[in-house]
Length: 305
Image (tube, rainbow, N blue to C red):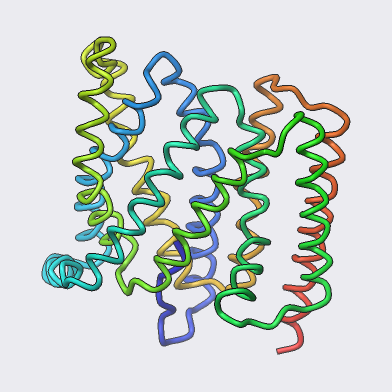
């Protein structure tokens, strides 16, 4: 979701501090998202996904005007309905639909550590995507980081008895979403609004499918209904905070902050008592070593500029 354009004027020290706090807050919210989803463990995964989509739309609609103002907000929404941009956002919506669905499924089936694996791999996959699809140059430390991550994924497969397909799919759909959104010149809140609207028919279909098997959680009691409705703000607020912060801090800072969310998810999975064997430990150690090379190379490049 790093499509936010940098501001033209250099931000002041106060703006940089505010930007850092906003971006860090976004990653903290994403990191503790499993805690919120665990409160919905009695609700069908299909309904949780559908409600998140449906409540994200009004939340994003409000966010557009908070971030851009009344007049500019309407212009940005109108611009997003141009055929080419609308098509791009619809495509990105399909990838985020699969990503959200996988994430909710993993969390509600006590596989938070596996979801953390996906987002630890995401920055390294972003490097690989840049090399393969955008002809970006790769440094030696980045090559080492990718090699360590690959070995780590292989060890993870040995540890669980099969390749971590769900984590790889979660990482792959997020990476594809990020690449597509990078090509869509729409502000974060506007993009989320259009994506949510595009996915509304799928969300309604999921609710009909779920209701055919059992009563919907939203209609069961008021506390569950409130928790499901909170899915909208939980989706929109960190996105707004990230967009605010991304305009005011360096890309190096953002690059290092992105490790915060999966670290918190990983700690949450451990706190939930999910199995963490020796081989899984070796796997994560290799991936963390790769991230260490990645972070060191990022800082080294920043100092050289």
